[in-house]
Length: 442
Image 1 (cartoon, rainbow, N blue to C red):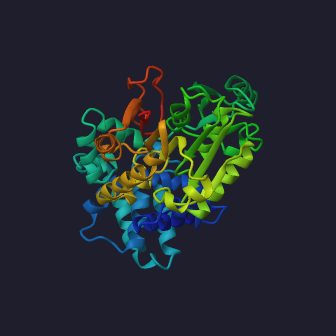
Image 2 (cartoon, rainbow, N blue to C red):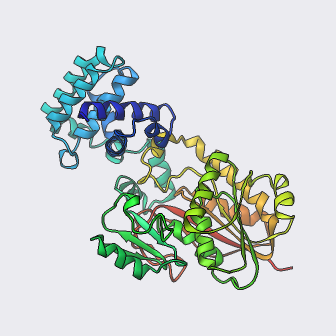
Image 3 (spheres, rainbow, N blue to C red):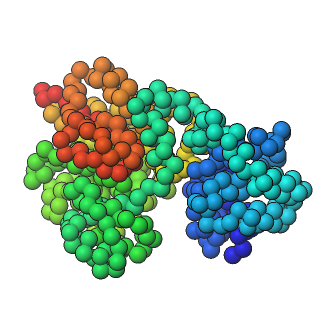
């Protein structure tokens, strides 16, 4: 397809994201034959959106109409660094103007867009120099996000922002009921794919590939999961006697990756009963699909984990759980490198609202843990309001809770963090937070 058509689709998606729609939903509206190329370009634009907006402010005294502004910023973002763009700057400018002419929403601004972009090509070095001191342009994150990171992580905030603007590696979790990491590595090598070991059951590909290209994916040998997320199941289950009947709750389970990992760790025939909750009925379907592909079974319920009165007695017999995994809804500030739209969708006020939801979930689920049982609280966030601060409040309110050795905040892309767990080896991973609580025996 012509590049101008892809640029049009990227600009439409960018405008949708600016309007509050997720990148996933925006891309779903793109024609399937255009989607792969549009996604690649859109992610590049989102990683450079702060710079593009800073440039547009320099060149234009008044913000253009939304459609024209989205197309202009799309082209500026892709032209910013020619070394990172698959297209020459003059080609991008030519095709962006073509896109403007072919869209009724931008046709009237095609000459304006042409003039701005050609000025950028002529004055690139000078214009870029003007933005060097602009934090929005330098870091490509909202200013409130940068300010909060500097407060939460004074030693690592720059590292977090740099990691967020990079591409995340493709990480795999091997289903050890069907294969071993060593054997799967051989299968990858057989088709000229290289990977490195990561954790007990993980591999990280040196170059990403389409998921269907993974050997035996449809037969359940492997799942795609970041190394940080792969820590959840071992943290919750290690130290428990998996030969004895155990009742485990995965409280916010979709799409089912952590549910599956719990069952994979237990092994075939292990008396592990897992209940997977998901409040969104459409997302709960993905849990069933994940388990079916991997050949695993769990009780999947569409229910609100914060309202046990609606499901615990009826579907779980009112029996307390030995272990609960609470992967709580959060800002997703730790997985920005995989979802670059997140930084532009979130607002500062979202953090307090989501932290309040996390506190409600902890308060509702802690009574469902048996004496001597455990609860693992985690978020894919780097903000302390969704991590350390939450833990301190929880411990103050629950004197029967003990904090066990836990990784705490995992910094995205941090290869040198020495966590409180001796086996928490340095690796390339998303941003995450983990706190493992144990209830006092009675």
